[in-house]
Length: 156
Image (tube, rainbow, N blue to C red; front, top):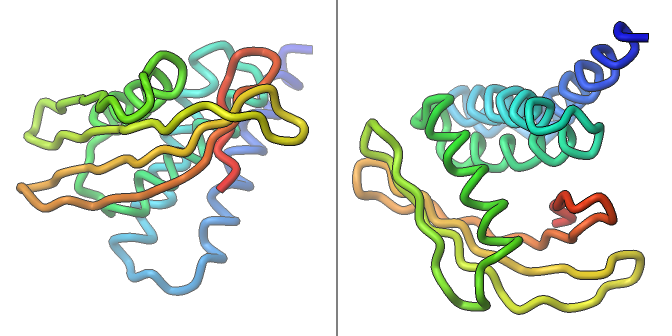
């Protein structure tokens, strides 16, 4: 039974990496960032409870963060960015910035929008995540919805 529990998150993480590779030819650094971000995010999601939804969410967010900035963030920075994003989505007031800072100089800010209902979900939020590497901002926007188990899933 334990083998099945391990295989499911591993298969999902591998699938996320393969899907990230289908995004076109973003260049070697960005492609590597997507792959390593998806893997790291999937592992972080697995570590936060091991539920399949956590692994998928972690891989998606990790791929987004990894793709935006290539290899510029280390694993600890990605963990901090992911944790800050989850905190901002869960507890942040609309328009209120939620910041994080890495040990190597990278930092970022997540600004969640107001909560709203969306078909199939109790609550969703738009958000903006700006990450600064060497003082240069990289901004992404998305929508995440809260699942019945309390986790958040990016849907765009």
